[in-house]
Structure formats: C-alpha cells, structure tokens
Image 1 (cartoon, rainbow, N blue to C red):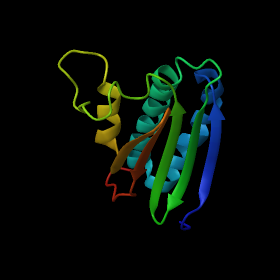
Image 2 (image 1 turned 180 degrees about the vertical axis):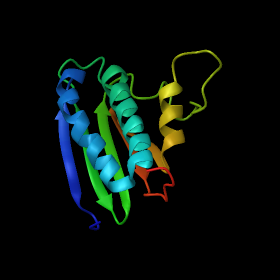
Image 3 (image 1 turned 90 degrees about the vertical axis):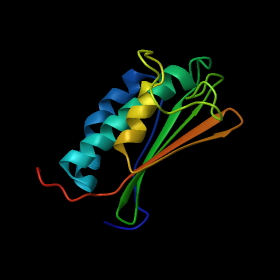
Image 4 (image 1 turned 90 degrees about the horizontal axis):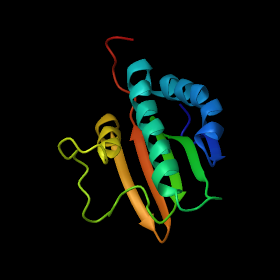
Length: 142
C-alpha cells in the first residue's frame, strides 16, 4: 500500500446522496484491511455518517458532511467532518463512550470505538471532525 494516498473524497447532505457510494467504500475497506477488519471499519464508517447527518447537521438545512478515505503507511484512515449545533456528541468533554443501560442514544459511538484501532473526535467551533483508523490484521477466516 502506498504511503499517504487519498482513496476517496465525498461531500453529501443526505443518506440518499451517500447510499450510491456505500459499495465502493466497503470494497476499499476490504481491499485495504481484509474482509473481516474491512467490514468492521465499514460498519464504523456507516455509523459515523449516520451520526453526522442525523445529529451534526440537523439544525443546518444546507449543511453537508465531508468524508475522506486515505492510506497512511499500512493504515486506512477515515475523516468525517460535520458542522451543527447538536454535533456528534451531546457534550464532548463529559460524554462517556460507553452505552448507558437500555438508552438508545450513544450506542453508535461505542460501536465505532469498539471496531477500530484508533478513534478521535475533535471539536473546533461548529465543526466536528471524527477520525478512525484501522490497521490491516492477520485474519484467520477470510
């Protein structure tokens, strides 16, 4: 895998605009991380996109989500950027990434964090950047 190569860069404002890209994103994840780790990364990516669209841009009708996929050495990195008043988390400094009992809200971030090797959320003004990385692993069941 090349070092620092951009694989895909998307901008979309709705699930409808995102859906046509899902198969290509899954293929890129699997090609770079293997079938099992690639699927885990894709599930995390899909959950992050849902959060960005449903929470991050809810209060901005013209808001959009930017998604970039790139390689860094042997890692596959995903950046998802969104802007909005609700953001991706209710409160970044105090929010736990562990699910809270039977409460439905907050499980997506726990899913994302559990399935990737590196996970970070950074808030700058109204922009929230979520970064996930997956290292290709040794898969025994291809």
